[in-house]
Image (cartoon, rainbow, N blue to C red; front, side, top):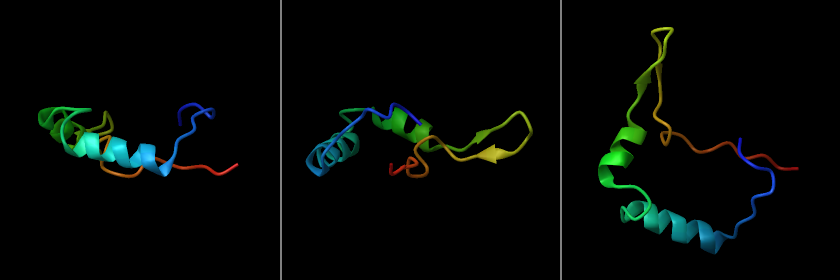
Length: 59
């Protein structure tokens, strides 16, 4: 998922987490929508975009 050329630090991730929790990155309404499960065309329910951790790969 995403670019393989993205680098970050623990400090950057902490800043991002803080900004997300303080509704700086996304409004509270947008976060609620992102966490809301949605219906697939198959009729199954999928978790919201932010409902699980993003996949991490180690090269």
